[in-house]
Image (tube, rainbow, N blue to C red; front, side, top):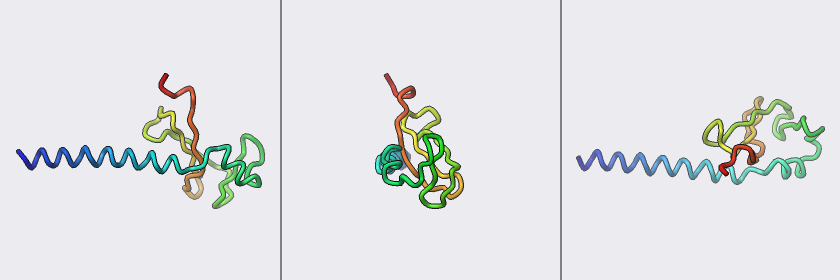
Length: 94
């Protein structure tokens, strides 16, 4: 019984540690405005922003922990690098 409780406790700790880790990685990403300010040569217009690693304009945005998570991050579809983060107001908990 003690071993089962120890395994369950370990799983809970790992779950919350992973969740905390993805939040820290997300928070270190530049915001979209910061990305555009740092790399103005990669911003052609509001709809076309290029990757700083491979110059692709193909990006994908997704929620940090789920499809509906208001914390969004954008990655390059060509090379897979994380590019910027943003918070989507309409998905935030009111």
